[in-house]
Image 1 (cartoon, rainbow, N blue to C red):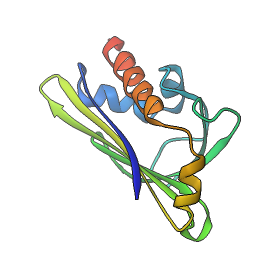
Image 2: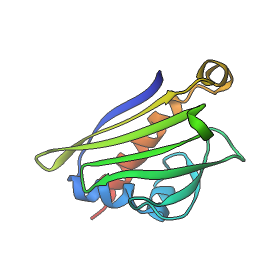
Image 3: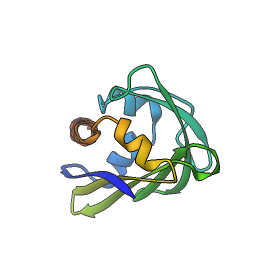
Image 4: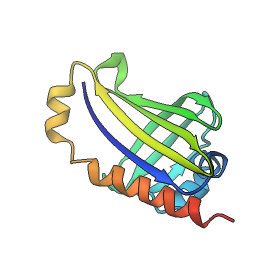
Length: 140
């Protein structure tokens, strides 16, 4: 297993952060490093995400778990589990702030091959957390 992760304290309550995190239009507008999302972010739904980290390529993603307003999981990858990404979002209330974390774990038989060709996603994760924090903190 390989992974990327980011943690950030956001000066906004979890429901405000959650409102942006689960609204495809607001999430793209928040400048989190996502160029486009086709579909809705709701439990069991599938959507295609275009990331600034890998321009021109859409990633089919499924919302595997949604526990508002504290936990969400996205999964995607290749058939038969040859390569799989599982992204987990956690929001922990801290008074009027939120401890936000996002971690994506990669697994599968093709992981060693694919990992060597993947770009470093840490800057993308940092951009995501910064954009989400900025948009959440600016929400009235």
